[in-house]
Amino acid sequence: MSREQMVVDGARKSFQTGKTKPLDYRTHQLKSLLRFITERRKDIADAVKRDLGKSEHGTELFETLGLEGEIKLAIEKLAEWAAPRPVEKNLLTILDDVYIQPEPLGVVLIIGAWNYPWAVTLQPLVGAIAAGNAAVIKPSEVSSHSAKVMEEFLPQYLDKVMYMDKELFDHIFYTGNSTVGKLVMEAAARHLTPVTLELGGKSPCYIDKNCDITVACRRITWGKFVNCGQTCIAPDYILCEPCIQSRVVKEIEKNIKEFYTDNPKTFEDYGRIINQQHFKRVMALMDGSTVAVGGDSDESQCYIAPTVLKDVAGDSKVMKEEIFGPLLPIITVSSVDEAIQFIKEREKPLVVYVFSHDKKLIKRVIAETSSGALLANDCLVHYTVSALPFGGVGNSGMGCYHGQHSFDQVSHMRSCLIKQLKMEGVNSMRYPPHTARKLGWARFLLLKSVNVSRLRRVVLLALLAGMAAFVVP
Image (cartoon, rainbow, N blue to C red):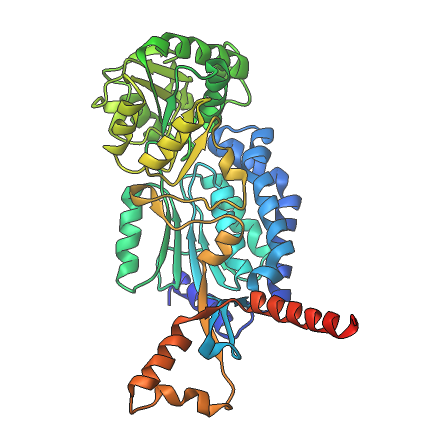
């Protein structure tokens, strides 16, 4: 038996013993994961610095801070999430216990990504642990230093967290590009294994000519160039009318200098492309486009300056694939109608961004486009809201996570109905022969739903009214 098979076999045996199911065990594991992040903060920051050139401040802000929040939320809400969830009854089941019981799926494989090697690998792990599953994680080999730290230290804190490549699982959680996502889904389909695919795509950003362009461009600059543009929910390209293109370029150029100085190459908080393969891919995307800002590069350091491309055509090379780098194309459109049509003609993105004061315009974009999320007048920040499901649709992914959504994603929602062996007379209508009279009663009892909480309130009010009538002469 290979090491990988032994790892998975150990995880499955651990799950089958029921070890991972008690809430106390889950809470202990979550607290251990939190302790790992706290005690190994320096190791994590050093690894991310070596992988992506990210500063310690940037690692805390975009990797570990949100992860700590997710763990603390799971610890606080675990009992609530794992509790039976009552549902509305019909008259036939009004005296029965009817509820949904979340239960763990089993062994969950989590395949991480390299662009945020800690956040996108360990946040799904939080949900897997909270739901009572055994977890097998595979960090991205591209961010090799982070993967090494994870493999070396994480098993010292968690009971059953392992690493492997492929085996039989009860759920697969993959973060990465759509090409590999299709392969993951194809492999999972052979075993009818459910999958969560957190992919990406080209997230458009429409700027209304009547909005506050200064503020809009400041927020877009931050959202696009953080982590050197290697963010799945970064604005991929801008759509705006020709009359404001020059203003948009100037504002973004001003913000690049403010955020990253006149020389981003020497600025600590401006990172690097992950490796030379991706460096060459991103540089090639500029072919045939006009550089309005930036364009500088250094292959030896995998450095590409924050770059804005203007007058970009919809069929240009940079529009053929997700950029995943510090290039920001601007495509001019005549109106919001053309912008919406442009978005609708392409694959569904992970996010649609729109900047406008006009709430009707924003609502129209929501109504007439489809995407994993829509964010108006800011970038990226929806990722920080644990109550919002984070995920894509169509080519940008399937399934979602964050907060309770992570818990639910790797749980089976088991339908439960517990009836007593009494009152058999009430059940006689479902037994043959099926007379018209029986069917009439059955239709009434089965189709008439009952809100038990409301019924209790009605009964209580009736009792109070009766008491009042008795007390008052």
